[in-house]
Image 1 (cartoon, helix red, strand yellow):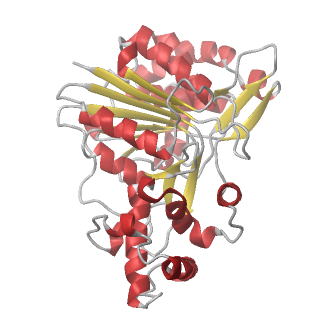
Image 2: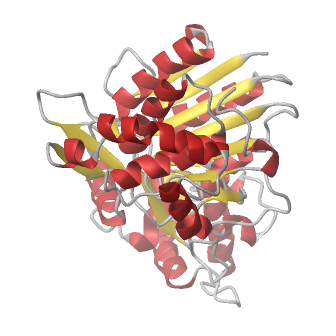
Image 3: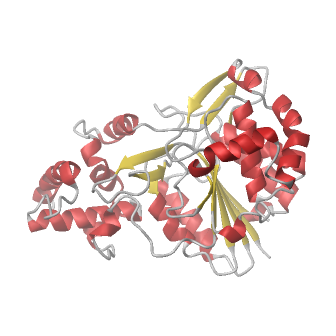
Amino acid sequence: MGKKAVLIGCNYTGTKAELKGCSNDVKKMQRCLIDRYGFSEGDIKILIDTDDSYTQPTGRNIRNALALLIKSAETGDVLFVHYSGHGTRLPAETGEEDDTGYDECIVPCDMNLITDDDIRELVDKVPKGCRITFVSDSCHSGGLIDDAKEQIGESCKDDCEDKEENGSGLGFVGTIIQKTGDALQSAFSHDNIAEDSTLTNRSLPLDTLVDILKQKTGNHNINVGNVRPTLFDVFGEDSTPKIKKFMKVLMDTFKGGSAEDGGGFLGKIGVLAQDFLKEKFENNADYGKPAMETEVGGKQDAYAGSKKNKLPENGILISGCQSDQTSADATPSADRAEPFGALSHAIQMIIQETDGKVSNRELVVKARNSLKKQGFKQRPGLYCDDKHVDSPFIC
């Protein structure tokens, strides 16, 4: 059985999006995988933007690392991905929106966004008999593996949390929480963090993304209506597959001369985006070639949260929060620990307390309980097939 991992940390140093704890999360998880779970250092790919000796976590590099991880997998292998960084949400273009009405995205250091659909396409390629666990310590991460079944999420908010506090209704899990709750609270309490730390949301607002893209391109006419075309304009062939699909459908609509496409396709955003394209095509007839060469089954492939016929069987998502919430990046005072993500730190504490012997369900329930006691509003989630709920975390 092979054990392979990709660990991604984006601090965005020197930008409006700067965070402090993401690279630290990655380094701690690397040590944890080696010491607790028997991973070999050579089978762990690290992408961080705070050290030039590592591969930079650009959109292209992240997608390549994930694709290589999955391509190299064989039946029985254990695959693990940890992402610490910003999350963001792009508004849907049609009335046929996903559950949250947005494309949930992770934000690489170069702003070349990777959507939930892109990650889902990768998960679908995991060989039968393998499983991939994806921990996303970012904002808006609750829907990151598109269409994954919610096991612990928004729908169990009240019931789960009431049972956590009472230590009942969860059997063995409740007993574990009762025995270790005080230790976790003492080691990682809200008072110790909030009063002596700077807390930053790991959420990239659209206006901040737009400002960064303006700075990157020198184009000050970018707005929410043309973020996707701008991403394609900046990254071209290296754009994420979902952006290319969006652009192909948009270009087909543009060339057909219909901004509304009969049923209101793309709506106002589409009109703004097509204005953006007009100048591009006038200056370069081959503009958009990478998108036009992308396979698209239908215009629904460009929709935010496009639906699949089948739930993913091999993917396990542990999210730092629900899709409409934010995750915390904590910077303690100088005389204390280095910066970290709230979920990442909670996971490290739980693994230490349990010596790594914890199921996916137990880990998420304990993380929720711990973060709630600290005063954080974020509620981690678990999204996977039923058969993985009580499987051991990672392996």
